[in-house]
Amino acid sequence: MASTHLDIAVHGDKAGVRRIANNAPAIAQWLAQVPPGSCLAMESTGRYHLLLARLAHAQGLQVHVLNPRDVSHYARGVGQRGKTDRLDAQVIARYLAHEHAQLRSWQPVPPALAELDSLLRRRAALVRHQGALRQSMGEDPVTRALLPQVMLPLTQVLQTLDKRIAQVAQGIQGAQQALGSITSVPGVGALSGAALLVLFTRLAQASADAVVAFTGLDPRPMDSGHKRGVRRLSKRGPAELRRLMFNAAMSASRTAAWREVYAREIAKGLPRTAALVVLARKLVRVAFSLFKNRATFDPTLHQAVKIA
Image (tube, rainbow, N blue to C red; front, side, top):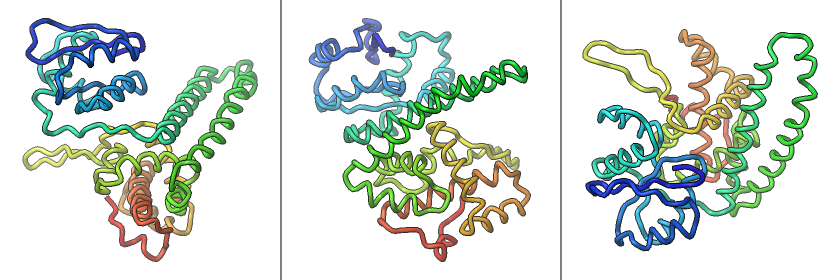
């Protein structure tokens, strides 16, 4: 799947992989040939998959958007040799055929929520570019002196994006109260609140454990027999969301509401980063509970929420 084309494979079909243009007329023409009730799966590509997902869903087909990491692990597990768009299409078809019962169906989100998600993704890309520029300048005093001039346009664009993110977030139906609940959690600001609003709205019926797992902040067990391996983050969700929540945890660790929680994790012997990850998970859980109940943060109750 790319910006210009889609490679389509049907499990069990020996005709091979078909390539079509990634535009509405070509996709609509192909979908007209797909039998009713069929299931489609595609990798999440940020935005290149969205047109196919929307048109297929509108036609009443069952759509699954897959985590690229899952597809990559599956490809290695079945012995795929090499990587091309055509090979990936065949692996996705095979993955769908065998794992269909375990997959969650994709559902379109309201346009305003989709715009908010898109704005957050664009902002994340700019932040990554800022970091790359800072690193590329190195320690040379001449190039370092030029850094403010280089950063100024990016900073101005980020400021404009931040204003637009706030406007779009406030314009979503019921978002004012929801955002008020989310950002009432000490440490959760406007940006992290907007990102959590997108996540919570999509997973409103999910459990808190599922929401934490979607962020990739959940610890992954690595046990075998009597051996207990080191827990590491699954990192399955959006990296930008984890970055925002880690920053929120750093802010929260300095507040009266969370200072002692953070200190207890440090006292257990956890490194600072690990303690902040624990706090970030707790912020997600508390914010999700408040979002679902449209309540505001009560520091006397936050200890009742499980730290995981």
